[in-house]
Image (cartoon, rainbow, N blue to C red; front, side):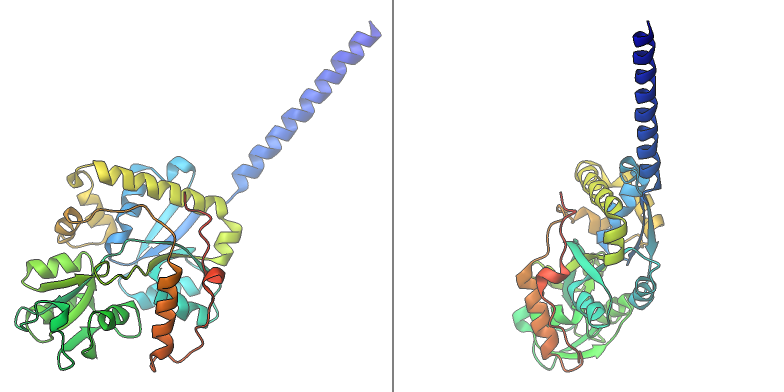
Length: 310
């Protein structure tokens, strides 16, 4: 009888130990920081983020994702550099500039921004081969926009940062050429601008998702959940009528009505790893640009982390 009592007591003790261990694991999971702060610009690549938040795809994986809309890359960069943002949608030129400034970050995937090289309807330019040195680009300088302009064709360049101003001056014939992201490419084309080439046509795929190394180290589960939710949002967009989410995209993304036409012409692709060849081409261009005076000798394998891609 004593042996039976001892056995029952042992079972009870072991059960309590297992229950405590299970509770401990639950607490540990609850303490994991499944939150992310993401900074985006008014480009089409953030549409799956907006849709994913509204449809609950990130929440499905336990992630509380906050998207911060920025109209100015300067303001976005300042927020990222100060540590307010865990990640941003940016590009390879900006990545090299961040690294040269001492920031610790990684490219985690390519994102589908979609850029277009456009010509004024008054310019007579019909293809990229028509671009001549005497033509004038109105663009932002020392970034991916200028890289795309140089890739398309050599012409004079003047600084014209606001995207809306580029479109207005292009259509009015005040500049010959410009480079803008979607949805402004489609909007400008609908206003009479000549679409010469997309970034894909030029063989350029340099828009990337960046996360700080601190976020990668401290929030790996959150970043993994971000990519899972983003993939679910892409699957939804591929099947759904855009009318189902268009109003939300315009409101939450702070887009103009013109994004509707751009989305109809967009086929989103699964996120994938950045290209080493593209990175090295960007670095070569930056090192040859006298305005970008700095040391950009960053090895691809040290600035790319694709562990979160499915």
